[in-house]
Image (cartoon, rainbow, N blue to C red; front, side, top):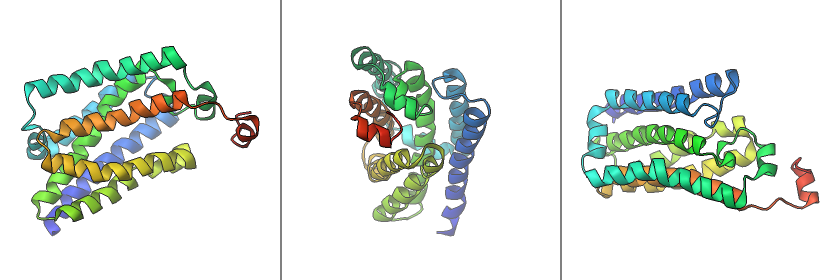
Length: 232
């Protein structure tokens, strides 16, 4: 068990440092969101994903060892075509949820911008590199599957707790709840489903796509409710 502590700590630090620097540098200092600086955001998280691959080459290789050429094509097609097209279609049909975006201007999914969702690709891939490597490290180190799930649920939920500070209670609960639920799904996909990393990335991205669609369709509340939320 002791030999597992160092790699797990490194992976936690990798994710924490990447997220902290992005928040402090992009969000707070330069006031740049994913939608404002999609290229820089994409390159930033791509660099962190590359670092994760350098530090854990065998785990990352194992994650993709059973992915076929068709699987890679399908994944890329989903990330760079399907996701932005869905955002564009919903934006054209329902428009952006302007009343909600006015309340939460830093929440990128509310823009329904292709720039946001394309920039988010690299962030999600980086997160899945870290998550997948951690799951494999724990499983290969002899940790039982139920324990892997429990550890991963706790860590993945904890990794989103910072949102309570950055975006408030509502978004903190929203992201943390779904992160905990994803904590049950990702270990199963990585450990038991061939090419499960592809499904994990797609499901992770679908969260942002479907959330954007859901909030676009969410009607503006009545005046009494809106006044309580400062949206009157």
